[in-house]
Length: 378
Image 1 (spheres, rainbow, N blue to C red):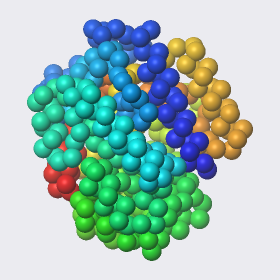
Image 2 (cartoon, rainbow, N blue to C red):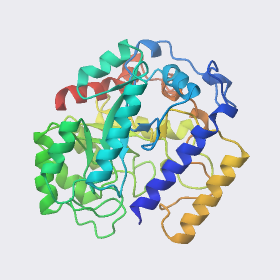
Image 3 (cartoon, helix red, strand yellow):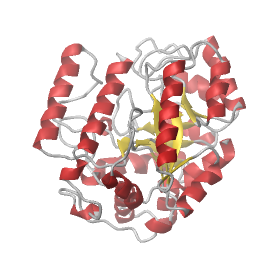
Image 4 (cartoon, rainbow, N blue to C red):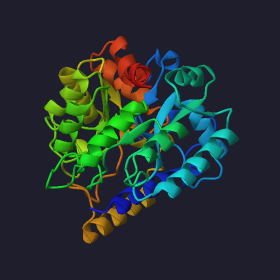
């Protein structure tokens, strides 16, 4: 599967949602006024440290943010997000340029944004009503075969690094590689260098053997930042209970995403489906080892007929080109419409509360577990 094509699709959909935002909401619009999003408040939300383990705000080529986007940053209640800051296919130079561009945006809007390089930066961002941007990589091309490049990017402030994307990498096979060959010799060495640099190793998108071998070799807690549970719905982008529990047993955290890979068929994914995966993950891993890695954008999607048609055409193109993800369908959007809000994390909290979870458990899942993980690893 083409890594570049898959990631370009995600960028395309996120950018399309952001570009049309002005037709959907104004600066003072509350999340419950967005069509199709149910009212849902969780009273401890504004005081909670809320972290999305995989989310996006701006594209790497962005030069500025509009007033609507900045208003939604404040409205979201997010203290921090793990934001992918270089894309599959980006080599060493391209990744550095994208970090430069990201830092320029963060500095330009310093009243709203802060770069996170230490765990307590998240608390500082929360106190200042800023959104903390945690730099992360979802691929490995920027490292090449030079382990020193891992140290270079760690020194620049990159705090999440994955061992692979969907396909094979120089470190190990991704989740869509049928051969499932696991870690390479270089990958074993890379894992040690990441840990030595106190980077949070992310096993999302990795194949089963890559996951198992990485966990067995690791001396520090790890994460699977955005995934689903194969026990609820089997899909190459989801993980088995043994993998989820192994991450938890080593002190790591598993993040559940809001992607269509949570259930089969053509129907839209619902909050109830997300809750099934969350409940299962909590049962398997424990309440201290589960989080949300939405794989969405802070800015809600402008979900209308034009957007749905754009999604349909793009998925049909990907299917025809043989680069679509397994189970991908042109009739399903790549998000959960019920949670299509800048305050989606509060909506998740509300659904968890209705499902019987205590405020303490909800607060852990919404961010406290990730904050504790950052404190241990960073």
